[in-house]
Structure formats: C-alpha cells, structure tokens
Length: 620
Image (cartoon, rainbow, N blue to C red; front, side, top):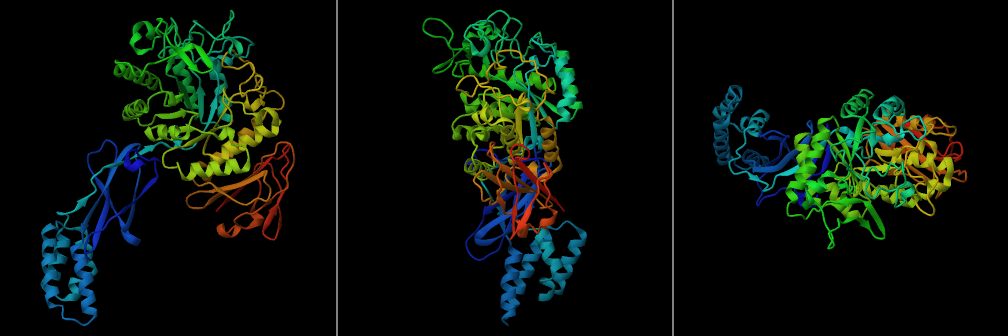
C-alpha cells in the first residue's frame, strides 16, 4: 500500500496477517511481535511473530472492531534462548560447560528480577538453587524466560501502520437502484416516499441488501434539461435529479413532491425493518438555482463575462449543473459545508453513500472527508462512481472509498472477464472492493441492447457470482434494452422523466434474480472476491470459474455461456482431485443442468434460452 501511505481494507472478524523481515548481526536468537491498537484505544496489544525462511517473520491478529487500527513491529534479542542454543551444542558435543552454566544462572537471575508471579518465581528460584544443566534447560524454565524477556533494548519499527476495518456489507451486498419519483402506480404522476415504501417488501423478497436512490433534493429550474437530455425543458418536464438545488433548498433539503423529512425517516426505518439499508447519492454539484450560489459565490467559478461556469466534458455540455471551485481561497469552509451535508443525512439514519464522479474532485479532499465521517461513524460506506483511468480509480480507493464501480460492464468476452477479474483479485485486492453493476441509468451496454433475455440472465449471473458486490438499475428485471440512437444511453431516459412500470410484466426475470440472490446468501464462498479461480473449458464462449470459502467447506462452481444467440456444449474440467469432490454429487442448483462425465471431464449443454448458466455447490 504505497509503503504504508494508505491502509489496506479488511472486514469485521477478519484476521490481519502481517509479515516483516527482521534480523540482527551475529548468531543471537531474536523474538518479535506485532503490536496493534484497536480504534479509540490507547493501549497496545501484541501477538508473537514466528520466524520463517530468510529472516521473514509472520503473525496475525483478529480484527474485532470496526474502524482504523494501528500496528507496528518490535523485536528483541532472546538472551536465554541464545544461551540455550549455544550451551546445548557444546554439551551435546561433550565439551565442558561449567562456565556456560554460570552465564546461564546470571541470565536467569535477571529474569527473576522481572517475574511478578509467585508460582513462576518459585520454579525459577528452585532451578537456580539446583544449578544443574537439566534444571536450567527445563521446559518450565524456558517458558518463564519467554514470558519475561528483557526488552529494554528492543528495536521498534519507526512507523505506525494502519488497517481499515469495515462492516461485512462493505464486502458483500446486492444493490438495487431506483428513482423514487418513478414509483407511483399512476402513469405520469410523481412518485413519493410512500410509493417507495410500498415496494420495499417486494425488493427485499428479491434478496437485495441495499436500495439506492439518485439525488432526492429540489431540482433547479434554470437551464433545466428536457426529455432525452433536450437542452430546453417543456412545461411539466421534471429535470435531472443531479441538477441539485432550487428555492426550496439544496443538499440538505428534500424535493417537495417526494415528501417530508419525517416521511424520509419513516422510509429509512421501513427499509431497515426489511433487512436492507438505504443508500443516497452524494453529488457535489449544484443547479444555477442552488441557494449556496447566492450565499457563497466564492465557492464557484465565474467566467470573464461574469457568468457562472457550468459543467462541461467537451463536447458535452451540462448547462443545468455548476461545479464547486475546490481551488477557492475559502476552500476549507467549502470542505466543512460538504462534510456537514453527510453528517445531516447520517443523522437521518443513512449509512451508505454512492458518490457521483469523485474523480473530478481533489483526492486530498476525499481522504480528509472520509476520515472525518468514519471517525464520527465508522459504519458509513462510500461507493465511488468513477469510470476513469485505472490509477485514479485505485487512488480513490486507497484514499478511503469503501467500494468502487469497475469496468465490468465493458468486459464481455471470456478473455476480458478472466484477465480483469484476476487483475482485481490480485493487483488491487488490498484496497479496492469491486462493485459489478450490470447496468446503470447511464450505461446500457450493446451486449444488453442486442442479446435479448439471455444477455440479461448471463450478465446477471456473472455480476452476482464473479464479485461479492453487485448491483442492477431498476428496469433490468423487465429487460429494458432500447438505446437512444447509436449510444449506451437509454431512450426516454429516467434521468429526465418519470417512468411508470408494470413490475410484473410478462417476460420479467424476477424469479431468476430471487434465486441467484438466495444462492449468494446461502453460500459463504460467494461472500468473497479475491478467492476467484478459473478452470478449463474447451469453448471460448463458455467461462468456467469457482470459489471456495476459507475452510473449503463450501465450494461453488459457475459455468456461463457468453453467447446469447447459440447453445454451447463445453467440456468442463472440475478440480475434483484437488478438492476431493465426488463427481456424482455435482448438481446444478440454478437450472438443473445435467452433466455427463467422460475421462475426468464433465460435458453439458448451456442453452441461452433455457439455461445460459449453471451453478454447482458442494457443502461439507
């Protein structure tokens, strides 16, 4: 982690395994320990390190508290152990060890000065009175000397390192994204929090853990976008929720048509009562109508003609949005105001935030902000929505973001998926937790546009089983796949209008979603990401991979036909010998796909219309 610049990430209940190279001149033996300090604690605890090959020492400690832990290393010369080693060699070689026995007694007398247990003092005193080599080398004496070492000249590593410990939902969760204003059952009628509340049991029944809302704040009227991102709105157009702020308020206000703050609090309680939690969008941008523009013009940028600078990503223009000026001379006050926005929503019961475009804001700001928030409430989770250059995505994760969007949407072939998953599982696994969203309001990949129902099932299985974190944007279950022209944008995008849906329309895949989410919860192997392994399949359109939990008691193997247009008949090479699996016990728990075994290979048919994927589970 950049030589200790950033802390790695773990989850509550994990063990942190640490390794260090520790050595000294000469032949004396060493002892070493990892010293660790839990959050909000001034007292150091310690765990012994064990020496391995070439001066590499290793140890571990359990992370039983959420927050940021500190740790470092300490080593000291093992005087008694060194004496035992040398004396045994001489004694076994038949040499005279009388002088060595005198030296041993002197060492044990210094140990006796440090002993505070009366029982240990008696054992040590008896050995000293006896004086024979057998007594001075006895196991009981060695154990006492180990318990009371001389650490007056111990060497301590000159840095205190850190590890961030999050709750389990940071690592394992299924997300469901919806627009609250589209949850009314009446066509064209603006939805309310009460409408969302009626859908919560249904979403919980599908097996989701997090319900995520785009911004719920008042929407600006100046330069409001019309339907399909038209530059001019017509009467009745509702605008983009990301154009935050109007006369009704800004980032700490609620769009009046959604309901009141009390309505929101009630919704949060309902979500929690159904075993889920609510995630809010944290978008650091404003509409030209945001109250802060009049109250704090120094937080924004203005052009030479006096007009406020709106957001652009040339040639795209976002006239309904203005960005904050993070280089403002009064930036500290801006940082604190943006922090207080989070504090406000945390006080309403929100513990998870999806952060919009964090790569367009300074990394030092995020490092400061996330540390401030998690010091106050270490359970808060941040998901970084940063589709940008890899190193910037990595830096944001290192700086504190709990989870990260990824390029999963654009990885569709067997080679792409395999290499990308292995990169995430090995190169960035210490700091980046990948959240595989199958679609978003901004991204409708051509694979979904052209692949029909099989494509939606294929991408669902991949997202839900490759990663321990995944999500879908509502409409996915209804196979919505109509794009705006030659783009990845949805036609009649919900970003600019209200969409009223029949959630039980024929052809939906809600049963498949429910079944897959149930399998995820039931199998601990799917609760991790970096345990992913890929196994041979003789078909380039069939990807075959598996996961095992830490104790290898739960094994999950997944075969997916990546071709949404044609059936495939692959030969799959299960690691039956490595994991001691009886081939006769392997059954597909998803669509009951049958296997035929020949010469150690399993043959099957994956038909995209009926069973595009198969999931095999072994429990022992």
